[in-house]
Length: 154
Image (cartoon, rainbow, N blue to C red):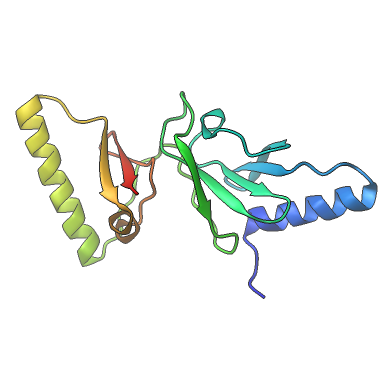
């Protein structure tokens, strides 16, 4: 059996303690990094939480709030594996991997941003990349690159 990530271990412990204590068990717990921030009876709309928040159901399923910003909330939920740690997004700056493919994607992204700025006189609010491009770069939807939000094309 695979080892659960930290959020999964915490929820498993919460469920065991509440069940043994006779206390009702919430359906979903919300984590900011490894810190529990809230619980609720249902997942609800993503705009109610900040990007990067991980939601874990009592059964162990996990979702990460992606897109959007910290002021207006996340744009949606993305299902994630309960067996791997999820990095916090929080609208933080992306740290690209240093592999050749990631460097090539970053170079093309820089060229596009330079072109966009030369034509429009400003930078775009967001740039949409394919999910495999984001994964190659080591980025997640909602992270910032030069102040521009990276989004995933579905």
